Amino acid sequence: WQLIALARPAIEDGTAVRAELDVRNVNRTVGGLLSHAVTKAHGAAGLPAGTIRFALNGSAGQSFGAWLAPGVGLTRGGDANGYVGKGLSGGVLAVRPPADAAFAAEENVIVGNTVLYGATAGRAFFRGLAGERFAVRNSGANAVVEGVGDHGCEYMTGGVVVVLGRTGRNFAAGMSGGVAFVYNEDGAFERRCNLSMVELDPVRDKKDQILLKGLIEKHFAYTGSEKAKTILSQWEWTLPKFIRVMSVEYKKVLDQRARQKAAVH
Image (tube, rainbow, N blue to C red):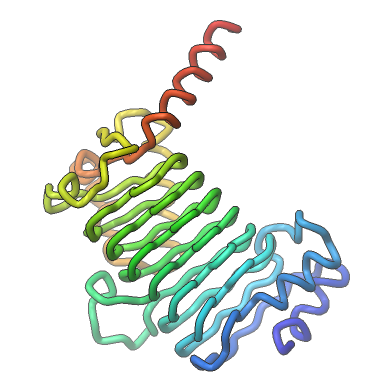
């Protein structure tokens, strides 16, 4: 309710709103009621990107940023529990360590399990590691994370996931759509990937390269990631270490569409 009160000018007439607040782990589903208020007033299209931006500090409870609507952006300076971005519906999430953190973000867990479960749209940036089942059943959101636990991108059907670090085992199990780009720094990703439905390829396509680099640049802009900064500063050397993960059947559909488009022209 506090977020709705602060966002009232944006909800009523589209006035841009900015605020900084503290959260605790007893605060669950932060942003859910706000998103309901936005969609009730403006429909599924929500508000223009960046209309509502809240910077939140502390440790958030379960389901931080769940169902976040278009036009709503939440930035966390701290960590968050499981189900972050559940059902993300067009908003923007960014989670990074506090400014005074004394640890290396890319080596520590910043969000819990089952992050982005059932997300349909929007963007998410996590400076640090995620737990198990990252982006399970994601069908349209784009996300960047610096490492994931077991079963990443499980049953994913759409969207784009970029992993700037190590994955756990059984990555891409049941993945039937969308695309993942994994920074295969240790050269052992293939052994941790479930290859029953996907193929692994270098990132050769120019459009894929532009998409990948653009998302990493956004990740740096939102989180100040040192990992992203290093990768971008050595792009010609780091790009060949990325692997594209894509469903075999989804790839066939894309190839067929490309041939049809070429035939028309």
